[in-house]
Length: 190
Image 1 (tube, rainbow, N blue to C red):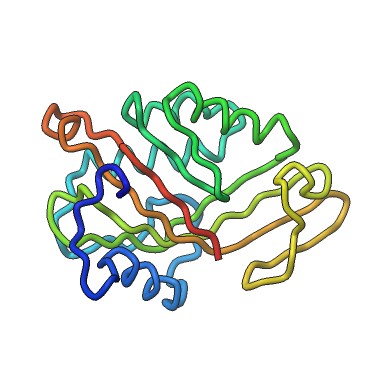
Image 2 (cartoon, helix red, strand yellow):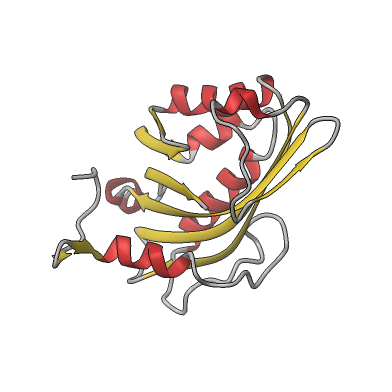
């Protein structure tokens, strides 16, 4: 069981996995960078949760943003992406910093839509797009860039662009203390 997940099983399928499948089928509706122009659910999401997510995604696109991204998590929070798990603020911060020092020249995240099933938004699904530019081909990612639904463009360096969905779990204790932090951000790439 994933820490922080409380969803019920129905015929071996979680609400989470069903939502993930549906989100991947939706067309993009916003093409602005960041999270500021995302479509948010009609359910009331606490503004502090929105601000924390916005700061984290803005910082993820900054070569010096590792500490700010890490600050969006609980001290023992986890970030999962590309099959790798980064746990703890220092490890998360280093992962962001290392990505840029290992060859990223630019990274841009766009969040198209945010989904929730109840207020205040302690569990959210995000749908977005990531564009990563590198000085060299994507050897540092530990995988070959292949043609999928993602757009891959090779020029002097490399550009990899693709859609993703992410599951963000907000720690209840930090929320109740007035400073909501993520205990989990799990990214699923298309």
